[in-house]
Image (cartoon, rainbow, N blue to C red; front, side):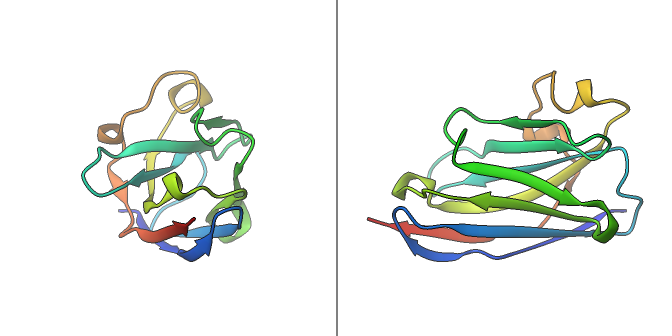
Length: 130
């Protein structure tokens, strides 16, 4: 069983930055597809970014490309999301999620839905004011 705990959310003005962290425990971190999702009130959960823990290949949603960076510290089993140039439309609860993937194709190349991820954190709120 994998346990994920997010931290780092908060309130910021438009144009500001935040860094989210997700600490993983309970299983080996290698070979996992780790992702960040977000959900705003009244909206569906959407994928933000993913990283394959072996090799570090990444995927970004078009809405965050060039502004957000997903990264990892394998020694600490920790996932990060650096969010720059934040916009009010980035306001949402952000979730860390993970699933085992036998290759980067099953994390980066092929579409991944939230239902593909069995492990989830409790989420952290990000609020961006204009």
